Length: 130
Image (spheres, rainbow, N blue to C red):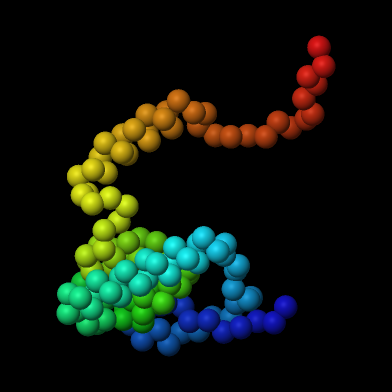
């Protein structure tokens, strides 16, 4: 398999460090479409607020090159960084009001409490002939 050179967006401000990596991981169509949608929303919101790339990057505490990767929909960028940039740009994530997260989180935690803590596959064949 041929190696390609990729930029490490988390190294430093100028992202001059390069890594050698195997060809990029394939992502599902739904994942790539969601990345395109969110990245376009971030870019649009930033521009509508009159913010430069550098201004948003500084507010998010990331390098400008990392913001550029976010706005291109690069799947290698940490999801927390993507959400932070989106929030700072004014993109609504999931629901209109952040105060609505609390009740939703509680409901999900209640459901998770009813399920097993871990899922394990049986080690041997199950004899279900009685």
